[in-house]
Amino acid sequence: MSTSPGLRERKKARTRATIQREALKLFQRNGYAATSVEAIAAAAEVSPSTFFRYFPTKEDVVLSDFVDETTIERFVEAPPELSLTEALTYAVRTGIASLPEEDFELEHLRNRLIREVPELRRGLLAEMMRPMELLADGIGRRLGREVDDDVRMYAGAAIGALTLLEPSYHDVKDADPRALLDDIVERTKRLERILVLPDPD
Amino acid sequence: MSTSPGLRERKKARTRATIQREALKLFQRNGYAATSVEAIAAAAEVSPSTFFRYFPTKEDVVLSDFVDETTIERFVEAPPELSLTEALTYAVRTGIASLPEEDFELEHLRNRLIREVPELRRGLLAEMMRPMELLADGIGRRLGREVDDDVRMYAGAAIGALTLLEPSYHDVKDADPRALLDDIVERTKRLERILVLPDPD
DNA sequence: GTACAATCTGACAGTTACTATCAAAATAGA
DNA sequence: TCTATTTTGATAGTAACTGTCAGATTGTAC
Image (tube, rainbow over all chains, first blue to last red; front, side):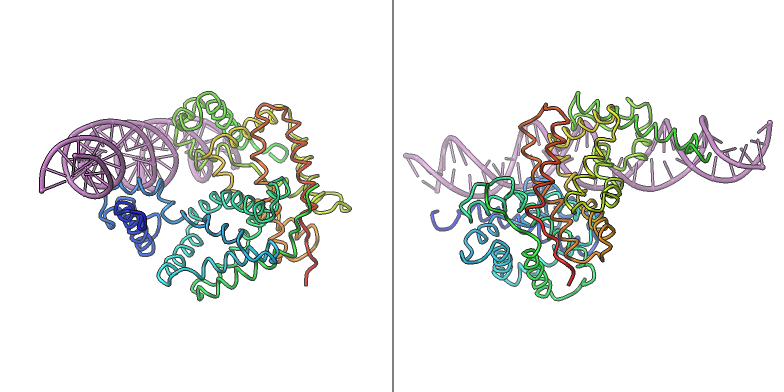
């Protein structure tokens, strides 16, 4: 009761994971649009009602948890001698590296879907404001600084800059996932040359 | 035939404008979600089919043309002595200033809707990649420079930075539209302090 | 182990955005 | 006025999503 999150919680987590896994498999096989929620529910052996209890929309099966709080947490906790962009790189790298191999595969599949299905690309962008806000907050905490307009702009700029780089991924459809990771890291580093956070007034 | 765009074209433009205007009025009165496409079509005196011919989705009635090619055109054509961010400011300012009063009102209403309806906020963000790409291309043309990763990142950063500033608008719900415009200009200027576009390698 | 309370699930019915198709109407050009 | 092209409206259908409610499952107290 104190150590494990309780039977109920565990069962819920398992149901959620099952739905997500089965959905991704179906998407991969038949395509995103051609896979109905009903089919997903059937594959996961739950009712459609239950599907919507776990994921408010069909998109969310793919998009939820794409960038989460733990990444920002790692950003804030990164070695203090690192610059902002270095800390960001650090957070992304250690985050992905910490995934068990199995989750890493799913993550890779998810990325591919997001890249290839226009609808999901759109959805991802729509979710992007949350990471921006999280990062702005993270910067404030990391620097012990009030979250002013400059900080917000810096955060928005950082996420925005990374966003537009995605298209080049198209060329490397079936590349090694780890290579893609290096790619992200490489790009995050380049941010340093473009972005400057001025001191508060 | 050569001067005016032809009767057919004009009629289509008028139909489109009517749908948009009636839709915005209904949204304002009854709320976005509570206004069905059917109701909009009825108010504009067209069939639902026709509605979807002019606007692929309900969201698009509010979001389409939010940032268009002409803004980028003005950016490229801005006085050459202006810096990138100054040119951006110039483009935004002259763009809005050129609107007739009536369109300006609609624009204001549209902005309010986007700010207040979460669904539309989401949609706006989703459309944001297009402006990013347009701007990246514009920068390339303005500087006579190849559109490399640095340029793309810069463009993404610029749009991203402006995105996250929106929330503060919440405070000024019914402020003078012109004041809001000044606000945007002010913020674009601050971009200069944060963003640097390095020379090509 | 039993009884009760809280939560989770499934079944059902309904709304609405959106698609596809095709015949009727409006417009351009001769 | 006649014909070709484009635009429109009517109809039918799909699927995402919502709300409700009774039944099943789990946690808790005794």
